[in-house]
Each structure stands twice: as C-alpha cells, then as structure tokens.
Length: 500
Image 1 (cartoon, rainbow, N blue to C red):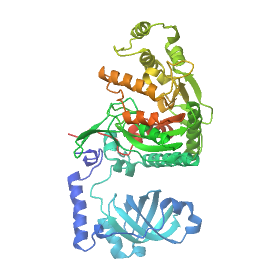
Image 2: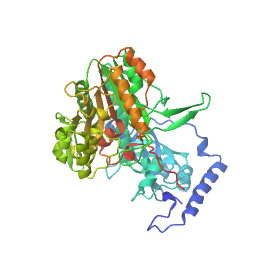
Image 3: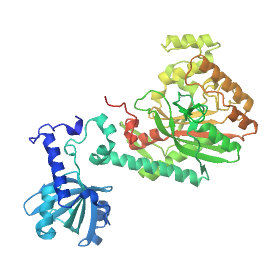
C-alpha cells in the first residue's frame, strides 16, 4: 500500500478500500447513464485562473469557460463552493441550483469528487467576502479521479514518494510546479543569450564508440546490428570540437549526459549539460562569458541578481572572485605545493592529512585531493578556481608560464562546482600524449580515465584554431537559482531504485 493509499491519521472515515469502490461506482453509474467522462475529447476553455484575477475589472460579469482539477469542494443544500486549479493557479467556483438547474446541480453533488478534472462555464464575480470567483451556469465532468488526493493539510510528505510520483507532487505543491517552470525559463534564457551572441545550437550523438570528454564511468550498451558495444555519452566535448575544426566558430549544445557514478544531493546518473566552444578566444574569454551568462539569466528569470539560500546572500551582479588551485590549498589546508621538490614529499604531506593516495597518483592528483577535502566547501561566493594541474586536465592547454598547470577554471558557488572551462588543447601531439597517459591510468585501475580517440586526434591534425570551451551543469545552476537543496528537486523524474 503506497502513501496515498494509507488511511489519513485523525480522519474518521470509511476504510479507503470502500472509498475507492465508491468512486468507481460513481463512474459506473455515469457510464450507464450515457455520461462517460472519458468519452469527452475536448472542452472550450477560454480563460485561466490567473488571467481572470489579473483582468477582473474587464471580465466582471462576463461569461468564461475554465477547466482544471477540483481541489476542494464545500457542498451545501442549494449552493456549493469549490476550487479549480489550472496551470496558473486556483480560482473559486460557486454553484447554485437555480443557476445550473436542478438536474445538473444534483449530478454534480452526487458524482463529483475532489481530484476530478472539471470544466466550468459561468460569469466572473466577486463574493461578499471579496474573493474573485466564477458563478457556474454549466459544469462538466471531464475525467474521474479514481484515487483520492493526499489529505490537504499535510500534502505529500513522503520525500521518496514525491520523487516517484512527481505528478502527484505537482498537483499538491504549487512551489514544486514553480521550480520546474523556472527551470524551463532558465534553459530558455540560456538559449536566448547564446543565440544573441551568434552561437549555433547543434545536436551531437548520444551513443559513442569511445567514452571520452570527461573523467567518468560510462554506461555501456550493445548495438545488435553492428555487434559492438557503445557508450552513453559522458560529455559533449569531443564532437563539438570537431565542429570547430570544421569551421563553426561558435557552437553549443544543451543535452543529456550519462555517468555511471554514485547518487547524492548533487549527482544523478543522467543530467543536463550545456557545452559551448568559441574559436579565437581562451579561458579568460570563457570567464567573461560565464559571468555575464549567469548574471543575465538570473536577472531575466528572477528579476534580480541577488539570491538568498541557507542564510547566505549571493549577488551575481558583483565581479566573480578568482583563486588558483594551489593558492586555495595553501589558504584552506595550509599546504604549499611550491615547497615540494619531489612526488614523495607530496605523498607524505597527503598521508599526514589522512588523504588516501593511490600508487598511480601524480603530483597534480594529490593537489586535487587536498582541494576536494579542504577547499571545495569553502568557496561560497561565485569563485573561479584556476590553473588546474595538467595531470587531471587531459583536454586543456598548458599554461605557458608553468606547463605543469593548465589554462582551466571551474566555477564554484555555494561550495559546489557549476562550470568547467579550458583554453582547449589544440596541439595533436600533446593531446596524443595526454590520451596515452589517460590510457595508462585506466590500465592501472582508474575507471574514470579516458580512452584514446583516434578520430578526434585526426581532426586536430587538420588544425583547430585557438578555442575556449565551457561546460555548465544546468541542474546545479537551477538548484542555485531556485534555492533547491538536492538535485532530485530540480529533476522532474530523478533516477530511483525500483520498489521491491
């Protein structure tokens, strides 16, 4: 028995099984009378709840047709009230026997239940208590709700059930619906911004012969006709950079990617990623674009560049901070990697700080371990973390000042990564060497290391211009802009373990 099928505490009612039967009996009676609601194919809705409220002065006394879900009803003798919810919100309906007629009114009383989908024709008016309402002249049952909605005062409280039955969560919780409306608006404004910057939106394959473009474990499937294993893409990068080679100077894609990794408040096995590439710029250009993009999207969707979450105010209107990974580790962990002359010294420092160092870890890997443990959660305000080690950045261009580090940044907000960007590596010889190092790491047990992509190397050998690339986790950006605590709160249907 699931959550909504359990008797509600404190309610002195018939057992739920009897309530379910009563609803089905009502449906049967309607069908036998030739009034099967499921036979209705359309309804002439011409107004929405919010539209009526916003334009009451013009609509008062006018006839309207509304439709939606009956969320409450207060049945009296010759007059009844109810609330109908549509995509814009709720509006009160007022039904009187002398307005609807005796037969239709009695039918409404006898056969309608909370949760039903109904259509109402009537006139707009304001009650004596001042509530904008629709006085019904006709009522039509459009679809029968055979299961009762959760008890109105407590809603759908079981978090697991909210994710599994998102449709019910959307019905009962207006704030949830608002989150997903904002999600759609955020993605729309991302597109508007990039289109306005003369980027071309493209689509690239979801099925890859090689899992590349990121450090992640892939999902593996099999193509029967070709008799080969294929990978669900873990990134969009390598195909998009092929397009830059082909002459598209500015390209982007907003697409689903798949990573066979753990699940927590920040991670879901499939998620939405924005990746873009711009020729003739570098990671500094990507910083400028990232900052302006997020600032613009926040202003367009929220009407402000300021958000407050967890008692912290974030202002995207202010310039974003910058700090190198080395300096962050020095500041928050008290470890200065410039002082290490050998890999062994770095290993000893890691052991002294109780970090797990594997035999395959190089100096850059150890620096990253320190950052993950001591620094990541400290970067609350928007901060560009720059100059990542070459060891952990196989697709980024080396820094001319220090080839052990790359022209790369990650954007951190509220202690979590939101974006990753490079001056893209366009040297095919260096790229081959990085791929070979990744292949060696994979052979040594690193399941997230990349394979060698020979076709991508061939593309680079034809020549790719200096290019800046950027990836933004759309789900995490939505979390931040809507104040959501967990990634599942911004995914309509998050991945869930099947119920036994």
